[in-house]
Each structure stands twice: as C-alpha cells, then as structure tokens.
Image 1 (spheres, rainbow, N blue to C red):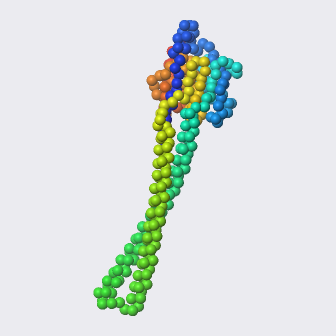
Image 2: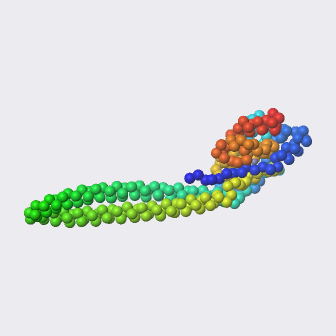
Image 3: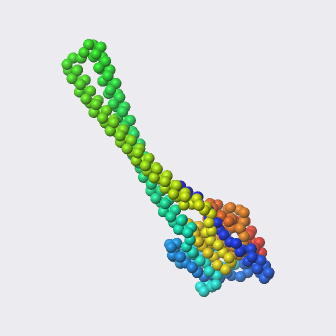
Length: 282
Ligand SMILES: [Zn+2]
C-alpha cells in the first residue's frame, strides 16, 4: 500500500529577495550564504551531525553547477537552518506505525489463506473418497437387493462398510467445519485490515498537501520529511529558493512546488539548472 501524500515545498519571499539583489546589482550567487543550525528538535530521531551532513550535501548540486561556493556552515552565523517539530511529522510517524501494523496484518492474512487452501484441499479429498466409497456401497446394495438378498458373510461386510461410511461422513463434516472456521478467521482479519486501511486513509485525507519546509531568505525551516532522501531533496529545494529561484512548472524538477516520485531523488533537472544559470547570470 502506498501513502497518498504530497509535500508542498514552500518559499514565498523568493521574489522580493531577488528584487533586492537586483537593485544591489548583485546576483544571488555572488556571495556565500553562511548558515548555522538553529532550532533542532530531537524527536525527528536524527543526530545534529547527520542533519548538518545532509545540509552540506544539499549545497553540492547548486555549487557544482555554479562552480563556486554558495553555502557554508559557519557556527554563529545569522542565517539559521531549523528543524522544527510539526503536527505533520507527528501524523507521518503515526502513519508509518499504522503502515507497519498493516504489513503485519497482511502477512497474517496470507498465512491464514494458506491454511485455508490446505483445509479446502483436505476437505475436497475427503469428499471425493467418501463419494467413491458411497457409490460402490450403494451399487453393492442395489446388486444384492436385485438378487433378493445377500449371503450372510456379504451382508456382514456391507454392515461394516456402512459404519465405516458413517465415520467417513463425520470426517467430511469435521473437515468442512475446519474450512468454515478458517474462513471466518480470515474474514475477521480482512475486516480488521480494512479498518486499519480506513484509519490510515483518514489520517492523510484531511490535508493532502502541507508545508514540509520554507525559507524567507534569512532562515530555512524544515517541518516534516519522510526519510533521509526526502530531507535531502527538501533542503536542495529550499537552498534553491535562497538563491532566488522560484518554483518551476516541471514535476521532474527539484524546484517544482511538490515533492513527488519524479523529483524525489533530488537530482537537478535541466529546468533547475537553467533557472540557476539565469538567476545567477552564469
Ligand atoms: Zn518551494
């Protein structure tokens, strides 16, 4: 199951920053943005060192294209990169927990269904055996009745077979009861699973989009991300805004307003590179 989740990568003040730079006859790339880590919420479960490593790694795509240093970690700088806990992250964690529970439930359902298939096979085999013996028995009885009765020995044998058939019928019924019990267990588990899916969907249905991060040109705020790759792409995106790059229309670009399957890897597209080239007059 895949979460229906889109992340809005947000940056409103990029344009005004650009205007400011233009009036100063500078390009956004002509100075190095020195930053420090500001607010850092440990509930994200990432160390400060790893967070910093992620930020420094996110500088590289832009710096490689510009062929110069654009960002630099300098403790004590005014520009802050903040990691701020949010309801979205809370919800994301809750969603991941639910997802794991659903995976476990799915595995249990698979196990029950395997047991069900075995039980059905045993039942069907038993039915076939029973029917074959019953047919043979009934044919014998008809034959001897047509003869006006069976000899004593044969009669006794038919009585024994009749009792055996009753036992066999009980076995068939017992196996059928097993099949039904497993089917019931399966239905309960599937119902439980579906309830879990409904809860999961509710969790993400109220707001499909949210602000994972933003920047006003004086700081970057990271509010929510799912995994290191998403954090990386988010940081590259926000760094792009800090450079004065606005959103682009191409979903495969890092500077697209949504984080999605196409731009999730954080690789700059030609559109991203053109945006930087124009912005920085490279
Ligand atoms: Zn953005």
